[in-house]
Every structure is written in C-alpha cells, then in structure tokens.
Image (cartoon, rainbow, N blue to C red):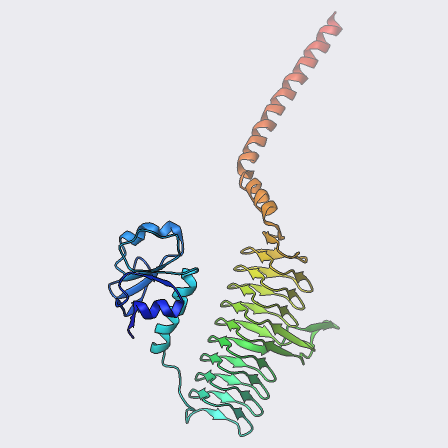
Length: 356
C-alpha cells in the first residue's frame, strides 16, 4: 500500500509541513523506521530521535518546531498514528471472506449481509449474526446467541448460548464468553453446583483480549459496557457490571457482583473482591488488592488497596525496615549494657552502705 503525505494529512486532519508528494509505504517506531516509513512522536523525551530517525515523515503535535523531516501536526499524535496504522494493516489482513464449505452452521441460524465464517466454525441453532461480521475458523457460537454488525471474532473464541454481543466488537483468540459463574453451596460436606442461568451482554465497540473469561450471571446478566477495552488473561465473574469506556489490563480479576462505573482503570493483576462498587473515573494500581468500595475519581494501590499517596508512604517505610531493624538491634545491645552497668553500680553501692 502507498499513500502520499497529502493523503495521510487528510486522513488524520493534520497540518502538513513539507513535501505533500512524499510517498509513504509503511509505518514504524522512531528508532526502527526506514526510508518510506512514517513514524510519530508523542512523548517529548524522545525528541532527540527526530535527528536520527530514518523515517520519511513524522506525526507530531504543535510543540515541535524545528525538524528536517516532513511533519504532520495533529492534536493527538498517538491516535493519529493508530488511524494510519489501521489503514495500512486493513490492506494486509486476510480476513476470511464468505462462508467456508467446512463451516458447520445449523439451519435455524440467521446470517446478515456479507457475513464471513471460517472453516470448522460451529454456529448453533437460533444464533443471529449481524451484517459484515467476520467469524474465524474454529469458533463456537452457541444456540440463540446474538452477535451484532461489523464484529471481528478471531479463531478459537467460544461464545456460549444466549449471549448478546453488540456492534463493532472485537474478540481475540481463546476468549470464552458465557462460561458458568463460579457458584457452589457447601452442603453436608460436599460442594453442590448452583445453576448459572443468566447471560452476558457485551455492548457496542468493546474489545476483548486473548484468553479472557467472562462468566454468565447466576440469574440476570453480566454486562461489559460500551467502549470498554479488556486486555489478555482477564477474569470477570458472574453478575459483574462494567461501565462504559473502562480499561482492564492483563491478569486483572473481578469477583462476582462487583460494579465498575464509567472510565474506570484496573491496572495489571489488580484483584477485586465481590459485591463492591468502583466509582466513575477511579484507578486501581498494578497488583492492587481492593477489599472495599472505591469512591469516584480516586487512585488506589497496594494491598489492601488504599489511596495511592498513603500506599506509597507505607511502602517507603517498609523499604526502610531492614535498616530500622539493625538500629533497633544496636539500641537493644546498648540498653542491655546500660542495664548491666546500672545493676553493678547498685550492687557496689549497696555493699558500701552495709560496710559503712
């Protein structure tokens, strides 16, 4: 694929500085870029690389003034670069086209216009697939499941029965949507399974990473809100409600019946107990262990999770424990010596008193 710098500037609605006929044939980072590539500068600390990059053009913000390379100035360089990357990648990606003769599709399935289904995908009776959706080979779509328009379902995804997936949803390989919630009752010394008869609702524009598991509700529904992005290896338990535009990073785990507000961020390996609420705009730091509800627009970290400033002070004290331990040992030794001297002086004094 080839684009001129003029076409790229139009694509991202940027200000072009330099030759508009410069040809761009690829995308890359500042360090790796070669002639013909376009790159971007989003973090000022990498500004020195502008002098050494081999890229043919750079996407920057308005703060960059002097550069020997042609520039496309935009408000958000990272976002603009993502749009350009999508334009290039979409031309290279060989998504399945049409319905493979090896796909196993039940007679009661409703397929929209321009649906593509790869080899050995299984779509059960009563399922509905929206227009322009792509389902890769090896996927399983359960009975009465509903998948919206322009979705992209990568290989080996399992969408269980009666699950609802909105429009423009991306689900990466190995994800399981609608597995049974982890519900058991301890009865007479044995674990009795509690039926999980609810469902999962994935709203529009959600992206779900590889090997994510989202459990169906015990009764009502587990919900992933519009625009939410979920990284790889995340566990979301039954009856969890995730608000709109949340970001959930790899290996985070959310226990049952917990609610996340809008624009919540859970950093990597964050863990949340069940039946709590995380307020709008709150952030949980990496490996944070959340044991109680978190107010809106609060940054918590540590275990148990507490306001980040407090967690940092506690951590700073913990780092000093070895030195404090050594000091205490020395003080104990001094106290023992002082007590020994005092005891000896008392004995001597008492002895003199008797002799006197």
